[in-house]
Amino acid sequence: MEDYKLGAMETKFAELMWNNEPIASGELVKLCQKEFSWKKSTTYTMLRRLCERKIFQNKNGVVSSVINRQEFQALQSEQFINETFDGSLPHFLAAFATRSKLSEDEIDELQKLINQHKR
Image (cartoon, rainbow, N blue to C red):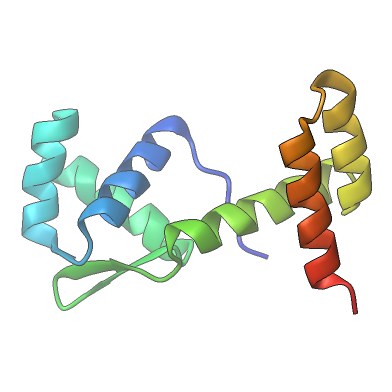
């Protein structure tokens, strides 16, 4: 299983790429210089890391996502629940609900999701 945990700067970099994809790698370097004050080598190091993790790709000098933002967030959530709650969504929700009271709208939304996924 791939590691879908990102550090703070990796997250900012991924967000920048999702917001601007597809983008030429040279343009990405300029954008990272402007947004983060990064050198070219820093941009390419970060890009390589996220490409190795199969989140983005750099084909023929054009950077694009392999996994879109929504898919990535779903994979991150799944990884967190697997690692922290032994894969149990009910245990996660129970832990969440003990610290934060669910609103009626949230309960209704969760019930709709449950009903949609019942077999």
